[in-house]
Length: 230
Image (cartoon, rainbow, N blue to C red; front, top):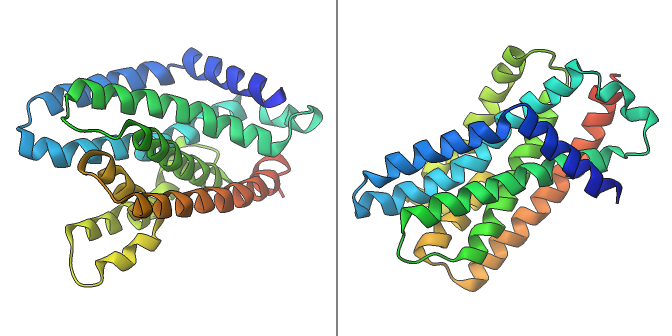
């Protein structure tokens, strides 16, 4: 029940501060750009766009949300509320995942792509959003300004995004699948181009495990560096 209330409160907070409006504007921009692409380019651009939405935007949005809450004193009273740190973090992950899924569905639906695995689209978007939201929470530790946060995200973005070029294909490029962003993008590509069920299941299970590990680490970092500021 506490988690439900926290999710609703987060969604109201995000609406109030214009995060949803930004998502709508960016989604419309994506749709306009995609509408001008020929079908052969769209088949590559669409999964990349849908993948980048919960990853890049989620990473930056969670930083802005936590910094806003820091400035408003929300985190200082968290220690005297019954809400647990893991519930606070899960609330952020779930609320941003909901927006990411809505954007992914809208972009895909209005792009009129011929064949889409809608269930896999939802699963892959949730798992991708979770990874980058949790990563953003950990990066936020010790940051007091947006500039600090932006600078700290750069090496992480390079680490997680650049290896995705492994999808182009070269000898032993499959080894890059151990990098969560590569696994997530492979799963997202399967949404639009098809994927063997056991490969999709293996990638999904792997990303669930990564999400769980990041959740445990994020809780520890959040409590030590943000709540109690050791």
